[in-house]
Length: 340
Image 1 (tube, rainbow, N blue to C red):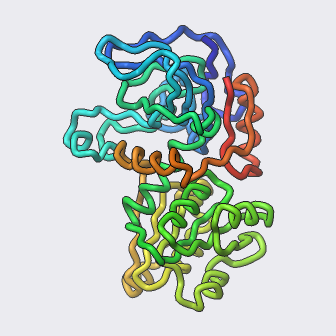
Image 2 (image 1 turned 180 degrees about the vertical axis):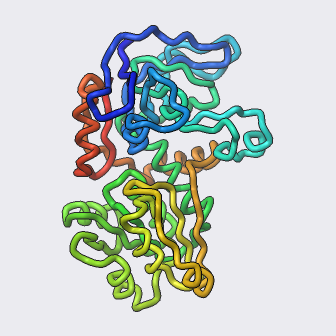
């Protein structure tokens, strides 16, 4: 089969479109023909070098395609069936997995990180990871859903415990997590303030339901939040930008507010004024992906049309270098998808 692999860490030039042996599914696995695979910032981080990645390596976390064949122990799937893949790998036997906390499993990793991902024509995965999709979703849309919608759902629902009527600040309106978080917050009848680097992205965010937009290149986030909320601040900040926005995110919280973070796109090292944290009784929460149960919860809303994936642009798999360069320029609003 054709696949894109990295044999060394580095820039887009290390991505090699090449022939590799077809995967052979185990008895408990399903072989899927990949039709679409969406990019995430994780692809860039792994390409540049992360611990635990064995080379050569296939990137790609978000996969949609068709069932080719199933292992002897697998039932319930038919050849040609349209599916997406849960973007994670876990042991499915430890106390965390068996109690539904898959993202706390000692062996947990994201597909395309410490295990090979979907930048290839065929992929074999455990049957538990394979989820049928409705005809209402095309492959590009389906591939745009799993990682970011699961991440945003776990952040807002699983970790921050969002409630109707709250005010939520979503950083990075044009990102996959930002697009998902805006919609999930509106699903809970929250008021949403979001940020982006240009007015076109803010207009698109408002079309998704955001009530207010802040241009972070022209406005100071915490000052604008105070104006919008009549100096009160927000209940929840959805943070995934990292060092560049951390201080503004913390300052935007109301007393007893919650900041939940899932990433550090602009850098992982941030400052923290502890007296500010304890005197205002703030909650700072980490969030990493989510559980299979949470994935099914958010997918129910996607399949019903209440939450909508946004595709920015597609590239053929052979043009993956251009896709990575496009992502690193941060011009997208929505997901970048590779087609096979």
